[in-house]
Length: 342
Image 1 (cartoon, rainbow, N blue to C red):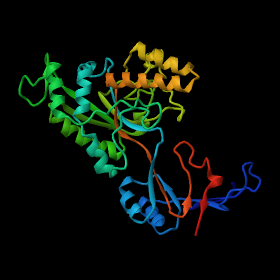
Image 2 (image 1 turned 180 degrees about the vertical axis):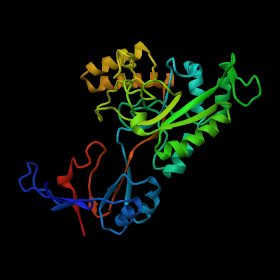
Image 3 (image 1 turned 120 degrees about the vertical axis):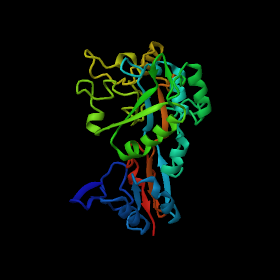
């Protein structure tokens, strides 16, 4: 397609390129329209004014499907997850893997996906969810407050002073849950985390920052990069998705004054895990690389340093009269073969 018009605030127009190397596209003109709010966007889709839509709120999915329009959850590489701070600025309880597991088991992730996303997505088990690199034998950390309480008891975190918060050696189990100011995290998820972890004796302090500050690097004194948190939540993806390579779990990526660009904001170091990440980078056989990632995935899961909260797929809706194959890497990759009827 060739760019032919940009009507600022309304649409961008592309017309079929008759000289395209793979043949002339079947649809003569594409209009990419802009909408100021989801309600207008979805109403236009249902009314047949547009044929394909993406990035609408999942709460609209039932209405869209009732109109006979197919709703799809398309993998984007992103997964909403918790990162635990195992560094020197984190709570000492989080040095214990069983405490990290207990925290994960204290939060009802399935209820979140059912209530907020209408079951359109789900709590995952892998940083590489819904790809061949995800270990198929893993099951996500479910909601089991009784097991969480047992793990905390066994780890020596008990409420010795009857104030409602577990403690050990005079240290209260008070965790900072830190997010950006995006409403779904700061205003919806945060209070639920505070309530549910409180039910097992973990006091949660809620802290949020504007995104530019929240995601600031070590040199910018970003709160996550400098370890000013205990649990942090955001959506992550491999930097070169669909390639699975990630550096954020490696020892050599821990940020320091000498390594301010480091991306390992959990400050967790397992040299064996780092070695596997380096090995997969150098591996050219796909099946061998997949096997290495399954091993990596198992180690991350067992260490409970990153916990999937939900599989963060993109929302797409395709009208019944449109034949279009989309994906989360490059939605228009096959656009020359899209076709519309009626």
